[in-house]
Image (cartoon, rainbow, N blue to C red):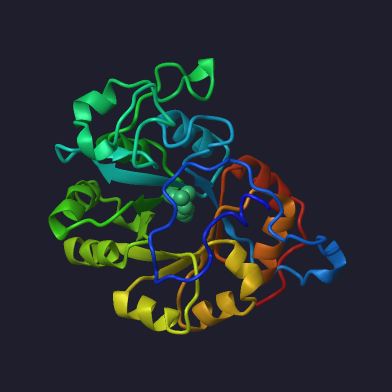
Length: 293
Ligand code: G3P
Ligand code: CA
């Protein structure tokens, strides 16, 4: 079983995705033999490269160091996860708890922002990153303002109310960054809260399955993007075309191997979310030119 196989793809509504930190490297997307390159259709477009939790293969995920590494690697966008602390602070963290990616312990919902900020978020990854902190939202805003040319794919974990969502959207809008951001969630109610808090913000829905009414759900939510788990590209070869036909963008995750990128390009996705943005950019640079539209 590969890392991708282990992710939930079966049933369930547009349910929350897994919150546990999995391995940062994924195995082949296709369980069987990888088709030879000649069998893969000519690329239809060059997808954008989105650095998953920053350039998380070379720096600790969801830290400023990982964001910086993504920017320096030339990623088109950086993906991060945000959550609320007990006292309402917006911090950048993937898991429910701080255990796996800091030197602390405990559920984020039980910790205050000041406590979380005092933790070391780099030493678990490498001694080279001792002193990295769990970023607060203002630092992400500052990163975007000082690093032109890179966009943000912002994931809100879990259910957020409109007031809570506004803690994220208000500083973003005040900084004039709305056009560099897509905000996404597995939770449709969170997408709805974002839409109410900031109607001008572009939104995405993350999905681990593709029910028959997926397009209708996306259109009802008003999202501009529907972002499927990578294995869905194998299980449902027509998915990307159906989403595109409805005017939706498609960003797929988390693809770290050339054979996975090849499939994503052949399907025509708009963006690939990867732990290896530098490698993917290098791989894209030597691919055949996209077919004329
Ligand atoms: O952006 C999509 C991807 O990040 C969703 O999965 O668990 O890595 O947040 P996860
Ligand atoms: Ca994420």
